[in-house]
Length: 238
Image 1 (tube, rainbow, N blue to C red):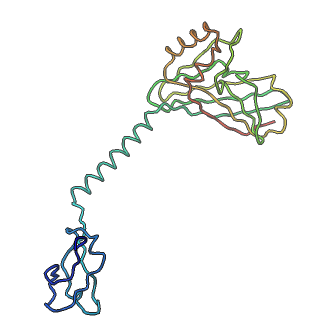
Image 2: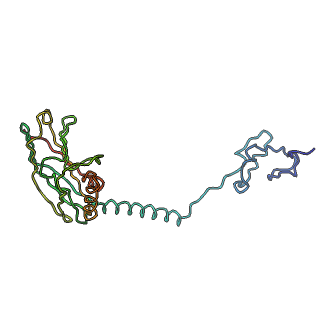
Image 3: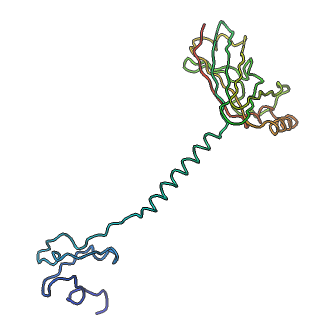
């Protein structure tokens, strides 16, 4: 009869059991690859199926050279990530002498170039007043010296873009003063957060600013796309 071949005779499988001993062939043998079948135990030939199991699985050993290669590769990738982090332009911003009285805000800012290349800080509004109206959030007064997003409409007039160059490892200090902050904004705040924008190249940026202005768009939009933002926070003294 055609169809699946049944396994019933001694000649079909010989696992090293004494002849005449009933074979117990577990179903799992049908799915185990031939290379995975190790030394057979005679206990599998027990009439009642006792024994340690039909096969002894071979242990997989990873060559020492492969383990060393994986370790070296992991260290190399980690080193590249660290190098990328160290090579990214970075400026630190700290604040001091923060005073808020009536509608006037003043503070001293400290900028340090912690990278290995010269950096440029957008400084048009760095000495006050702010680039946008100050906002408050949970007792925090937020002041920006650059726009946070591109504007959809142009303006008739806007202060020219100015930049401060900071050499690697160098620092710059300056004072911000805004005497028209507004009573509603200055009320019930305990700390100040200031944003400053910076970048590493400005020649192409200047060209984009001029081009944007000629096209009737907001001249600060290229600065928004160019800048990296850094924030500094300090308690307020009244």
